[in-house]
Length: 162
Ligand SMILES: [Zn+2]
Ligand SMILES: [Zn+2]
Image (cartoon, rainbow, N blue to C red; front, top):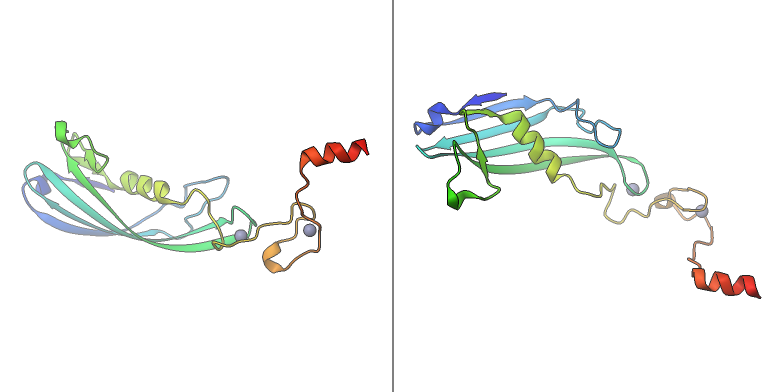
């Protein structure tokens, strides 16, 4: 959605609600956004800047980074930005977004917010035990009985000498 910021720079405010389709976004071979992102974006402005507070509600479905189980997670996030037509020297801050022609690509801005906010490790639960490196069993479902003690490679050399 392209938002014309002109009226906000004239001091108006408004809330825009819409559904953002991110179904085409692909991360590591999967498309995590099956359902549209619910967006409620509040704009309030003055002559020099427009404040944007976006409340987002969305669900991601991706495989757990440790055990590979398909995992659905719900997110409620608020992202805030200050939109300006040009930066002055005190504004060299990440919260400022330059919208030179007064036309904001809100989809693109929020897509970036959402993707940057995703955790670097996506887990089914914080204490996911992962898979057994020997037999591949999902250890969240119980132990497999394999001997998984790490053998120190230096000891391994000694053992081969014996
Ligand atoms: Zn897991
Ligand atoms: Zn095992």
